[in-house]
Structure formats: C-alpha cells, structure tokens
Image (cartoon, rainbow, N blue to C red; front, side):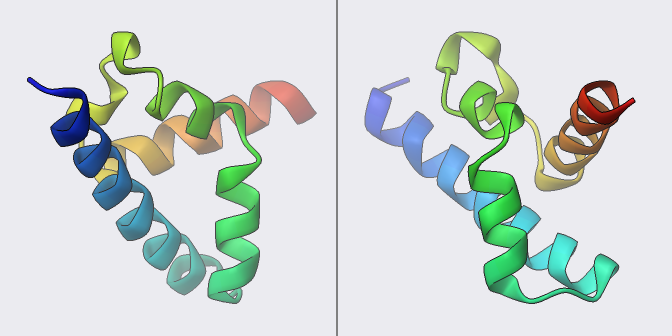
Length: 73
C-alpha cells in the first residue's frame, strides 16, 4: 500500500478517536486533539511499520489509554 493511503487511514483513525474521546470524556475537541497528538500512541500510529494504522479508532483509543496508564502509573 502506498504511503499516501496509509497516511489517509491513520488520519481517519485519529480524527475518529479525537471525536470519540471528546464525547466519552466530556472534554472539548481541542483538548482531545491536543492529548492525542502529543502522545506516544500518535507517534506509533504514524510509524507505519507498527501496523497500528490498520486498526480502527476504538483499538487506537484503547492503545492510547493503556500507554498513558503505563506513563502515569
């Protein structure tokens, strides 16, 4: 698959995850976006060797939350 298509998939996952997180945690879209964009999970999403870009937004959001627990826990 081309880099461009993988990037589009990752962008769609990130967009959906931002919206879902904002709704689930009752926070603004901006806060959700800032949290996700500054996370290691986001770096992993755009590291196409990781394969995270192949998963859905629910999987990505779960991955984000687990990785944040490790950092803060």
